[in-house]
Length: 308
Image 1 (tube, rainbow, N blue to C red):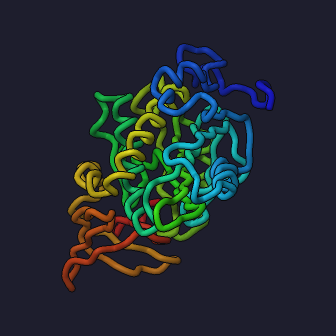
Image 2: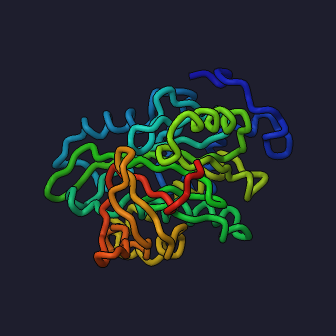
Image 3: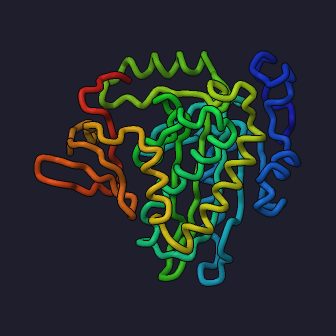
């Protein structure tokens, strides 16, 4: 890959007006926290179809009984031609405006022991971004199961895929997409597309980290996020989601509010979202009592909210 594949964002979008600051400074990222993974494990490419797809293929090729525990690779790309999120949604981003990366790891847990991993990932990412902008920490929240919100709009998307699992370990790829810099053109494009679909099927409109941290950049965002994810993986590997539940509930965007769960465009449950349990299940207070909702291909909306 070359270093001139993409033009930089306009200088007004770059901190300190430096047109080249949109690229990831590898050494600064490692010094800022990404050094939590070996140097050779940190990969930065201009373009790929999907960083998740790249690392999934790599993890599937590992000898399962001899695969080392821990982080195997972190792969970031400025552009993904087939980036995707939950429920098969595409992830749209302009090079230099969004941080898109995947982290591949082996956890000492079987498939059943991965319950809540996506929520723990959300906690780790929210904590990392709040540390970058501590004065604005109250503006960050989590929408079940793992969307990170800023002022109620989607800041981060997370996609977790399992490459394989044995009785003792699982190979997992964690994909993270963070809107770092505000992109008016892309936001207008997404808003126009959303207007063509029913309200219940619309994705949460986007936010950008630069709205809370004007000098937000890909390098520092990658550094703190990789560090937080590495620490989360170690803790989750030992204890599962339970130690993260209280922190998730602290970030809960819809705490004690009436919500609806949508699956394939149809409402499947409605109640007051009281929080999550030690497995990452959403606790929903309904007329029939408390229901525990496991993660899956469902969407969460505020009751009566027909906004995009």
